[in-house]
Length: 504
Picture 1 (spheres, rainbow, N blue to C red):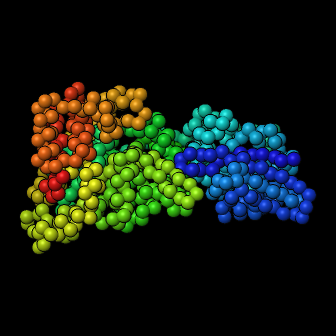
Picture 2 (picture 1 turned 90 degrees about the vertical axis):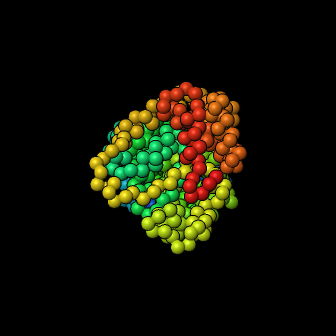
Picture 3 (picture 1 turned 60 degrees about the horizontal axis):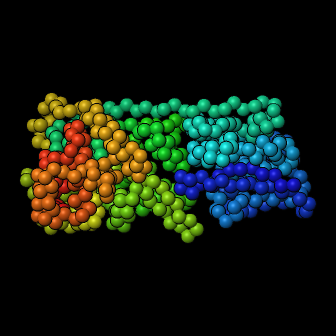
């Protein structure tokens, strides 16, 4: 007799169903796991054996074979412990096999039989709902998995609790979804003295999810401005929150099962490797660009990143997804993020500072910003020069709009975009618009078109640059509540496209 349990194998954010088969046959005593397991899965037999012993369950002196089907899919992770134990308990007729087959299980076993938290409970619950099965997981994962209301989630503290549940001695109560995490932002845009043009550019970028490059001497406020972006971004929608949380679940970043409505803000160090930024490594885990999905990726000291790392950003910026290619699989992760990059104008940082002139003007700046390739530079919608702030300005009282004021305008602009792109699954904000949709929503009036054509000829705008100016102009019009794109909107979009330190 072959007993069966079910679990999942993760391929990106997708959870693929895996059937765990257990057969106990005559022969020399052994415990084998087959079906392309990795080291952690192969070691499950020792954890399962110890957990059974802790429950005073003796394994028979026979040949025990566990098969993980389909056998050609690599099985990675310690979450296979619990389904292997369930299949074995069903084969020993300790728990009903029918109940086990109606459940998707995942969890790591301690040697004393307790269940340890694992990653991926949220996408596993999604897969269980699609196959009309309940989900059984460790107690620490229950609050996270329970966010998928389409399936019953049972969270157990130990293997003994699982046995008592299936034998009817002490049924497990369904898990309750965790709290929606709310963060308060103490950093306000009013804290930034001066830099009104930079603030305006960040407001436009946040409203339409446009990519921004800030250049300026050290201490001019680039990092300070970027750190205040989370306070003006609109909260995640329910669909976006679930989508983002699935990626964070695979990375073990969900705290106590709570789902946050705050948009991610990731700021990797410039020494980060390609696998850390794009994704990869052991198990092809998501990188920073995927962890920033639906949020912000802030890359300070942008030219200091490895050239190969910077060039790998070009395709994900355009497509909104990244493919981590391996010999046996191609893993896809979504990565629709807003890239905010900050850079000094040259190696010493004082190319544009008249009081501390760079000794190697202009070669120093050309060499330093030259590390950013033309194709990558072309993908920045807004380019801001952030000049140093005078000491006298630092004593001035707070002025300008607060983060709350900016957030309100951005929320109104985003609401217009939600209505505009309703029914278009591949478009959510103005930065996603392309083709016929872009022509429909962002075609400027005659004066605006004439200005844009003149700028395109004068500065040699690429086709990509031309369309990005249109998208930014559409966002500026949305911030002003205008139905049509007019010449002032185009003019402002063009002004942010042309940088004093490096032209188009």
